[in-house]
Length: 172
Image (cartoon, rainbow, N blue to C red; front, side, top):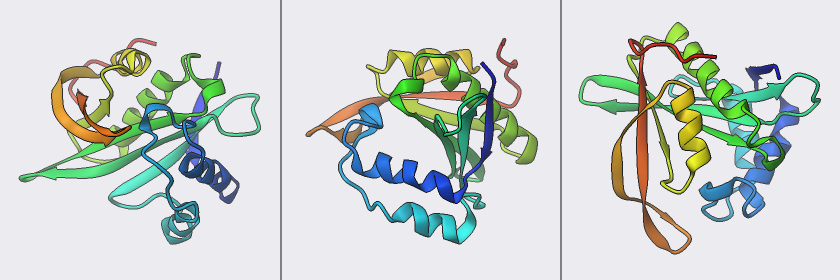
């Protein structure tokens, strides 16, 4: 299966609207209804390729529509800047090896085109598939962030992973 990343197009905005308005479509990350028009406003601003935040579509060869998207945003701690990345795949595309490939490609892209040393990703303790995906993409588990998010009526822990520029490349 050939996976690639590509810039967001206007046709992709429907997918973003779905993630904002369809409960459960985004999986464990559903935090309630969101502004369905926010995606169009953001696209009109910078096409999702801003300096501090970006998004690329996950495309699978042979499919006319995107499988999902990856995104990144800048985080600053003291004098250090790093990227925090995320991924959202449509349910039909999960469990097929697309996620780890897309996250690996996103890391390669960010390490090639930006000077950051660190890329971070967070996931839910119960999301075993994403944990395996991150590890396959070269990330290492760093620890637990206690009560980091409010979801489904309660505060929940999160797990933080990182990949450094100096870490060995993941094996294909």
